[in-house]
Amino acid sequence: MIKNTGYRKLGKTTAHRKAMLSNMAVSIVLHEEVKTTLQKAKEVRREVEGLITVAKSGDKLMLKNAVSNEVAYKKLIEVLAERYAKREGGYTRVYRAGMRKGDNAEMAIIKLVE
Image 1: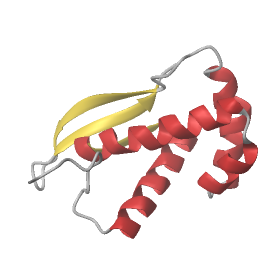
Image 2: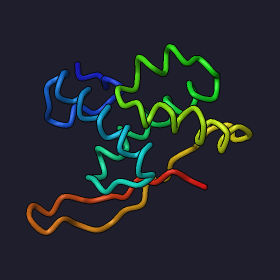
Image 3: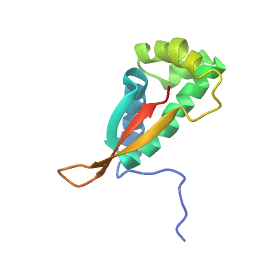
C-alpha cells in the first residue's frame, strides 16, 4: 500500500535534499526572492515559514542551530521577525513563472510578502 510521506523527495537523497532546502531557505531570507522549480518552491516554503516563526518566538538558540549563515540569522532576528510580528502565517508567496527552456520543467518564483 502506497502512503504519502508528507513531503516531496525531489529525486534526491535525504542529506542532499536537506542541504539543498536549507541553502535555498537562507537564499530566500537574504535576497527575499528566488527562482526555482515549482516543486522545490513548494517544499522550501515550509522551511522558510518555520524559520520566520522561530525568529518571531524569540528562541535564538533554536534559530542559530537551524541557520548556518550569520547574516541570514541577523536578518531573521532584526528585520523579518519585526516585519511579520502581527502576521499569523503565510510569509511567502509562490508565483508560477512558465516553463524552463532546457527540460520544460515548471518554474516558480518564491517571494517573501510585504
